[in-house]
Image (cartoon, rainbow, N blue to C red):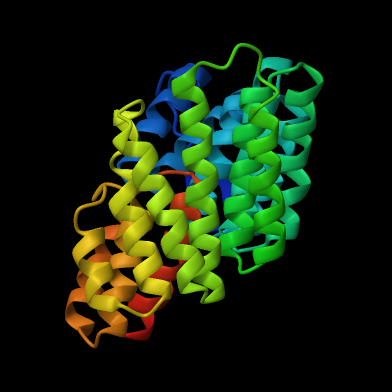
Length: 305
């Protein structure tokens, strides 16, 4: 057997002349190796292995899904969606929502809320149909987030409210779960109000979040508070306040790092902004957080180079 030597160029997976004498690899093992490379930021190398896997198994779901993710991280969205569309077609029922969500996130990389909505809504409908109201509520919130960061504040409010109301359809909600969904709803309303420039509403909803956290029923959500205060401060143009709060938030989150970069940029510290934009690019997550952070960081770093 021979191994196909594959070279990945941006946007394409292409095969070259076979290298004789090299044993063939198991496609699933190639996918495993490719995922590791992608997580390390080595998208070109990952795509080469995904291409080899697809040479051996053209209908391998995980290879199409992985290739789509890696291409998104490269910024090759059109080609990414070809693989993600194929992954949706090939996905077993248990992985269908994963594939649909990946496509929704792909559109978020371009702040295309309408495109993202087409796929998130399919996930939402599938979860509702199986009475997975917790999952459906989280999907609705994710779509609300896409609309918010794409600048469509009315649809953001609509979908966050849908998420909140759907959460209430879960049977036997415990008191801590009720507090959690109240917290998420207030958190969303505070951010939306800040984006609208409504300082009073933003501060009121932020205070509601603080009160819910002080109940102690969701200690793991404490990290969400400095993010919220920093976000509100940023959009209400208190840039020093935003910096102080966001530095207390999760520094592994590319979206937090992008907010910090913007706050430094707006406060006139271009060097510090560049430092944080550079940190954003170290994240290789295929998530809404990175979908809004990574393209912005790449754009700003290119502009200031």
